[in-house]
Length: 330
Image (cartoon, rainbow, N blue to C red; front, side):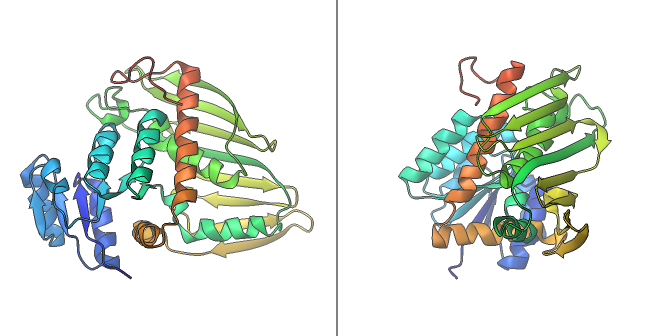
């Protein structure tokens, strides 16, 4: 396999996880860039990175970088996505890949024009367990899939300076944890839901604190989602078919699922992959996407989810301060 040079934009906590994954898979990291040269140098020292840049734009000018990994706060994702693509770089971007659908549509069109790959760091799409579960479903073992039920609840300690509670930084439950839940639901549905019903409770800072979401597609499959930012819930997903159901706990990086076959109440445990290697699988998939140009299915899922998140916000009448009122969020 071709050796790819990765450049890290935004050396924060998740970038450190990615750094460990890159070292395990590739054995090295080519470059790191940040607005603060000290934080970039600290990251470089930790992972023995070859090139250190005190400006993101300067890093993007390096012709030897093949893949840019964006792990900045998601309000900056769009800016760096577009800049990286214009410089001829493939991009692997943390979730949520963009704040709204208009941004993603523009980036996807630019990537297509330049024959580049963009992909989202949505662990669900890359864990080996999910690929196996999809095979089982496609075999017909669970009959027709009827319903997906998924929860995600965090209990964030209130800090007005934390991005989770900041409307200016696109905080709130939907873009932080809801993207996992909607991605889980979309992954197991045959097609993108066309009907979305939802209600929301706002936090005192104006971000969405909790919400309930019901979706239905043209195949009459449904998904029911509950999100909370200040009350813990199990990260649990259920996929129900006419002949059985799948239960997955801690689903964002799951390596185990239990299937119950309802005709005889037989259960089967499926164990595949390792939770601790979630980002390793992302690195491997991204490099395969580039070498094999087979990323379109994953990008379509990302696009569907981004449009659904926008549709949900549209129903709430929720617009971030930096968005234009007439901007297409869905």
